[in-house]
Amino acid sequence: MRVGLSWTPKPDADAKSAWATIISEATTADAVGLDSVCVHESRTAPNGCPSPSVMLTFLSRRTRTVQLIGTRLLEAVNPARLAEEVGVLDTFARGRAGLGFASASSQGAPSGRLHETIDFVTAAWATDELRYRGGFIRFPTHTPDDAPAGVSTPEPGDSYVPQWERGPVMPDFLAITPKPLAARPPVFVEIADRDTLEWAARQGISPLVKAHTPTEEAVASLQRYREIAAAAGRRRGEVEVALERHIAMGGDGDDTTVGGSSTELIDLLRDLGATAGVSHLIWNRRGPSDGDLFQFAREVQLMLQA
Amino acid sequence: MEFWTGAMGITKMRLMPGSLADGYDVFVEDAKAAEALGFDAYGAPEHHFTYDAFLPFPLQALAAAAAVTSKIRLVTGAMLTTLYDPVAAAEHAATLDVLSGGRVIMGLGMGYRPMEFDGIGTAKRTRGARLVESMEIIKLATSQDAFSFHGRHYDYEEVSLQPTPVQRPVQIWFCGGTSELAARRAGKAGLPYWLANAPFDRTEQIVREYRRVGAESGWPPDQLRVAAFKDVFIGNTMAEAEGLRKMMIDMFYAEHILGYGYLVDEHGEHVYDASEDHPMYQQFIDSLFCGTAEMVIEELKRYEDLGVDAVFLPSPQRELLASQVLPEFH
Image (cartoon, rainbow over all chains, first blue to last red; front, top):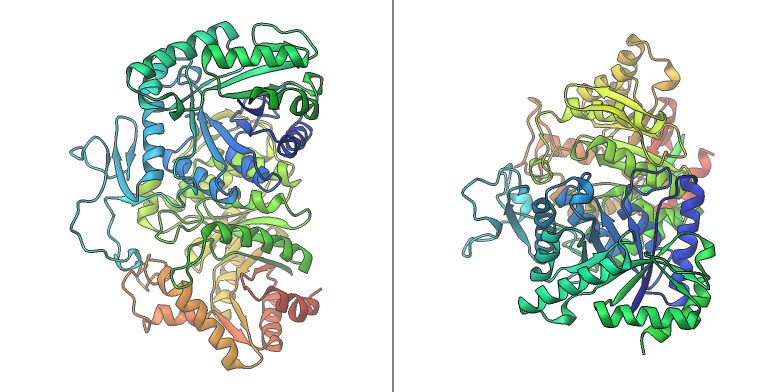
């Protein structure tokens, strides 16, 4: 089981002090061998991060091995820009970028817009020049109504003309650049909405259950995801199954917190792996009292792997 | 006068094949070196959808530079503001400003390449007016706890930036190329003005027009600040300097200046099919200053005498500039 860190904005701290903690814990996570850091896009608290790509690119130069995952909200996302941002982050981070999305319902957005955004971004990374005609996305903007639905690419047979010799033509197809270094950066989507859960399971998009969801409900959702994925012929190893939890080392658990001694934590987390297929635990940090990262790495993390 | 430097672009250069990731590493190392050499700011530009994977998000790249530096200011030059929602642009800047301890300078331009507007999904036709409104919004967003703005193109009611930047407001500059119209717009709005490469006489003409309009609009002289983007090529001889300029033209400018409509003719039309002997291209080439270190000092003194507050020297010859040119100004 891979283990990463995430943080929830606090109502009473300024960004300077809260982000200093994030930077410090991210570099510690990197040093002790944890696997990821995850920054949630937020603009509802004075220490939330409205620009995960900027913060993660900063962290890319303070860390060496952790995966850098930004979970995004649709309201401020331009799909073309988002595909570029992950390309830039992945290049600065030498292949360590990841991308996540909050559920559509948590943002008051239609699920279709979320699904199209994921479809467009992943296609843009994997394709050279492309266009996209969806219900919510047109790329480039002048893509006509009679273009094929979804992704389309240039017809074969055209001679190549260098871009700088094309003049003021408006190209029908554009390429997102830079491309990520990794052929397929991991993409996670929160599966709080039933239609997104079913769509992600069928499409092979990695599921994410966030920290506010009670563990019992999270397990049920992830089991449902596995059933639909299996029925659609998806292989288990195609996706990462990400579960965000609070952790209380030496403390008590509750419906969103896994708590107990190191031995108890190992058993509880391994059970989540067995019952729900969790392969990526994201430890949502509430503060230093959650537990020491070095101690967790030494007493728990390795025992989750073998 | 401040000395700014930075990248022309972070790209996969066609005539010098190499790893883009290595280029990103060089960008970060150059930021560290520029800080150590005593430059005041380090910058990054923006373009989209290009064959050479030109950097599309300068504030993001500058975040990587912020992580390894502590003093040098981080400047976008130019960030194509009309391709962003202005509040989102302010949020990105605030994020970097907090991470860097208040070191962000936003050089804001309007863009000119049609495919960029078409790809991102904003209107090229309204870019001039939208740039001015965007700059006003960014200023409000980064200086006020909450703001409302009702313009022709943007409308916001009681918006608060979370988090707020360290600088209130974040420093912004109007990147207007070599256009007198843009200089007048900036002067009228009392915004600091940043010129693109131009021969000195043309620079002087634009600066005087900018200050005239700014003064007529009631702005105090100390608010009407000027920066200039200036390529300089230093050689032991003129021939050596011209050789370096030719290399830069062949490697970069011949494609980026000739091919995408950067040049604007006397009728205000973008030129896409210019040959290398086109008068506008020749004027551009002549604006790339060549000379010995003494000649470069003399040229930059003219900018200082004109009251230019900052020059952006993107030169890869930073060590030479730091050892032979900057001491004459500090």
